[in-house]
Image (cartoon, rainbow, N blue to C red):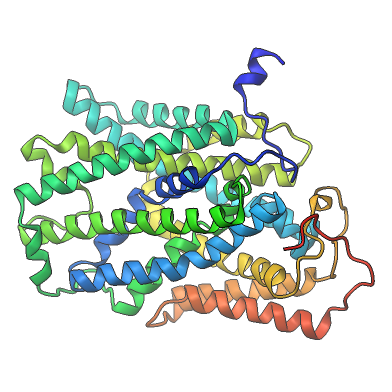
Length: 445
């Protein structure tokens, strides 16, 4: 094996690969994934619109419920050994799966652009604080180049980086919270009066928290396929994700509440509260590490999606191409202004897409979920592609309608997920015949 091959990841879509993720690795992976600026920003939206204790209770309950579909798709990956987009081949057929993969790849690349800019802003602040030198475009490119280099190492490299980055984030977050409590009266948040600033009700807050968990559905099997057991895939992901949500959204809620109480403009960024006390650098590093870990996972999943469209490609080729695209895309002017639109797009496209996949595997049966999915030119098992596409389009339409045109008081994420899965299940029960011989996965769980 050449030096180049040893340096590059050898990841494939095949189900036969070594299981590298233990319990702690899985916890740290999902901890690193969800402690991110966007999750911290979500915490900011909740306070002072809701009482602090109510906001944190909503974060806990919404994360516990919202993480369930995330766990189910991850468990599918662990059982079958297949990445997320390959799993869609069973319900949607090869063509439908390729279309979903292209959409997923485009969304993840665009998402990576935003994350790269956020990381660049944090690194630029850190460098500027230490040296006085500031160059945002350069810092943005450097951040994305680091992401690409990590992704090129494959899942083994990512697992190592995520583990140490998660530890660094938790340590830095603890320092930031300690300093906030030292310089401000954090206990005053418990008696903080309610003030409507972001139009957030209890129902909308719950939906935002649930949607945050749902946004990871399309990537969870890409990583949990490497878990050593189903139990690790479930409890490692559950504990890591929920703990991350409490840390990140809690930090955002604390910073938001303190900024309002002290008469500052409302913010989620702890750097603004601590820079005057000499602790802006640790706060900036929390943001930097959080964005980098999430961005690495986004670029890796985009690579897996590309490989599902063209399974014959070696891992490093799409990883490098996508990496180059993300490096230059991060410099697009005004890309950060599209942040909320991307969140809406992710919800509308992928909550219904994986509601179908989960219903297919857990309600209709595991037949057809095997490595044969990679080779088959036609749909394996039940001929469900037409029903799946109809259910998906119905769910996406409902998501768009209930989000943009006639918002529900309790949000659209959970209703869209349940209704889409139900439409698919009823459609298959009524209209899909069961073939006499169906290929089975090698493990029938």
